[in-house]
Length: 620
Image (cartoon, rainbow, N blue to C red; front, side):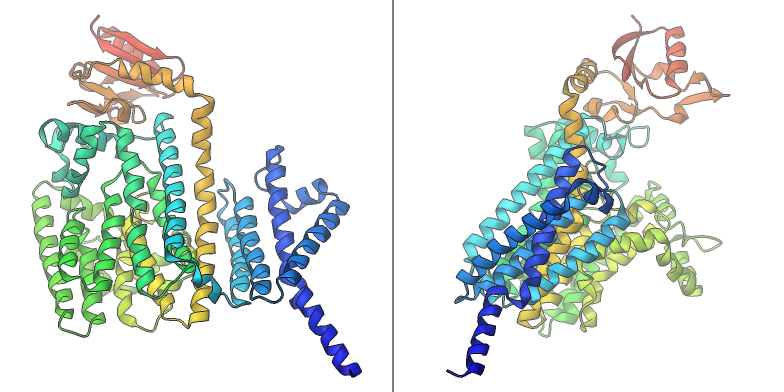
C-alpha cells in the first residue's frame, strides 16, 4: 500500500469522524448550552433580557470548556458509529437546526423587544437554513403519512390548548373589555333567548349587531353557546376554530408534493403563524371564522372542487361585510391560474361577490354604519370634497405618491415585517404574477386601512385572521415550485422562522396564567360580587367588568361620557335613574365622585371587592 493511499484513507476517516471539521456540531453544542444557560439564569432571577455580560459573570470558563468538549465528543462518537448510513451528516444538521430554534426560543421567552427578536431571528434562522441545506434530507420524507399527521395533530392540540388556557385566564383576570368581549357575550345571550343579535352596550342603545356588521356566520356557533352559555365558550371556540384550519393546510401540502416530516414543517407555518396566534388572545370576534373557512376555500380552489368553492364562498361572505374582498381576489386568482373552462367560475365568483358587497353596504348604509366605517377605516384617504368610496379612489388616482407614502411609516414597516418574517417573504418568491391577487387583501385590509385605523395594522387585534391564511397559502405553493432539495431546505427554514417568531407571543402570555394562579381567590371574590347582580336588572358597568355581567337584556358601558366633570370633579351622572345597578372600578379616578352622587340619589352599596370593584344598587 502506497504512502499516498494510506494518507487518503486517514483523511477519509478523519472526515467521517469530524464531518466538515465538526463546525456544525460545535455550533449546535454552543447554542444548546447557551439556551440552557438563559433558562437557568432566568429561573435564578436574572433579568429576562439576557445579556452576554450575564453569561460571562454566571458561567465559569472551565465549565463552558468541559461541557462543550464532552458533548461534542459524544456527538462525534455517535456520528462515527453511524458513518455507514446516510445519518452522520443528518445528525449534525438536525442538532444544529434544533439547537438554533431552541436557543432563539429561550432568549425570546416573554420578550416584548421587537429589535432583540429581529436580531435573534436573523441569526438563528440563518443557521437553521444552513443546517437544512448542508445535507441530503430526502430520508425525512420517508416518515409515514400517518405519523406525520399524528405529529401535526399533537402540536395543534398543544398550541390550541395553551391558547384556550391563556384566553380563559385573561378573561378571569379582567383583561377583556366591552369591545369586543362584552358585545358578543350580550349578543349571544340574546340570540339564545330569541334568535336576535340585539345589544345595548355596543352603541349605548338597543340595536342589532347585524345592523352594524353583516356577520350572519355568528349563528353557526349558537348551538355550542346554547349548550355552554358563557363568555369562556366564545374565547375557547375562537381558538378551536382558528387552529382547525391546519386540516386543509395538511391536504394542500400533500397535494403539492410535501412528504413525511416536511408535511409537519408546512403545518408549523400555519400553527405558529403570528397573524393567527396573536388575534386569538384578543377577546372574541367574528373574523375568527375566516381562518378555517378561507383555508378550506383555498383547498377547494386548489383542488378545483367547484361545488365546495361556491358553498365556502357563501360562508366567507357571511363573516362580515368586507369579506367579499377575499372572494373577489380568490376568484381573480382562479381565473388567471386555471386554463380550462373552470376558470370562468373565478369570474363568476368575483362578480357575484362584488354585487353582494355593493348591496350589503347599501343596506348597512341605511343605519349609518357604512358611512361611519368608511370614515373610520379610510380616514387617511377620504378628505376634502372627495368623500365616500368614489372620493377615496379619486384621491388615490390624483396623488398616488401620497398613497404609497402611507406604507412606509415605522409602524407599517414593523407590521409588514411581523407578518412576512415568519413566512421568510415567500409570498413574493414567484414569477407567476397572478398569484399576487392573493396579496391584495393584505395590502388593502391591513396596510391601507392600517395607515389611518391603526388596529388593522396591529397583530394584537383580529384583522389578520383572513389575510394571514392567503399569505400562508402563497408561501406553500411558491415553495412547492422550487427544486426538491431547495424546497426541503426552504420549508424547514420557514417552519423554524414561524416557531421563533411565535415564541415571544406565546410565552409572554404565560403571565396571565401565572397571575390567575397566584391570585385566584382574589379574582373569584370579584366574580362572586358580579354574579350576585340579578339577571333581569338593568346594569351599567366599567369596561373590564362588563363582559362578566353582559348576559342580560340591558347592559351599558360606563364611560367618560356618562360623567359631567369640572376641574377633575364629578358633578353629575348622565341618566342616573335609568340603571338599577352601577358597577364601578375603584381604580378609576371618577369613582369616588360617582359614589357620592349615587348615594345622594338614593343608591346603596350592594357589594364590593376591596380595591377593585364596588357595586351600587338603586334604592335600599
